Image (cartoon, helix red, strand yellow):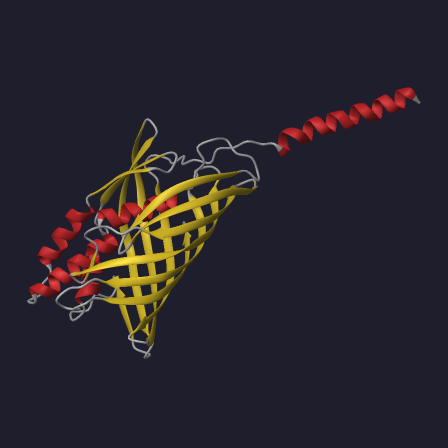
Length: 311
């Protein structure tokens, strides 16, 4: 009887020893890219904006589809140097009155300068340096690409050229691109984590609006091929002294949340899917200027749903 009990106890202890390391498995998701390989980001983003202007409710939807190619040129120490290019850009705007407009890089019509510019951006390389931990160190070359494109645009209205250049800088310039890339890749933990562990990352978005984002990530699961990560983020606008829209000084007073569910490839650390839901409320102030004497405050809400995949 004693021998039987010892045998059972021994089996139990062995089983416990075998299971314990698995339940406490520590990992550190990071970028492990291969030199010469090209990795893709395919983004589909839907934005719904609701505003109240002079007591009138105004809403519109913006759909955007973007494909980016990221070729690994080399790796020095823990930093990858990437050659990045746009492969496709499509934007659709649906206004409340039922009017819709589409700008497509693949359909640059002669009377559509915006689509012409989108088409001209395709396959024009610029460069990104990013660490294995997802820190974006530099973005260079985008402004040079935009400068060359706008010098070649055949538009007689110089004010229209300046306006388009300003709009593209806000959405596609180096500052905006670095901010968006930082927000996308500020997800990797700086320490070893186990399933269920959490870590916090801070980032700044700089595009039409500048905002700080604080996100708590959690490693929800580990599969044979992927890491599953969930993020709960808080966003708050940051006002800069020279913030402008269409040449007018503006101020943002917006705050909200960003919820994300991310799948990372285990072998490369690359994002294979990132689904985000962003909800922001507050107001947008147009400060006193010759075009809007006395200024104007516009209450607004912004809801964004985005899905990023690797193909």
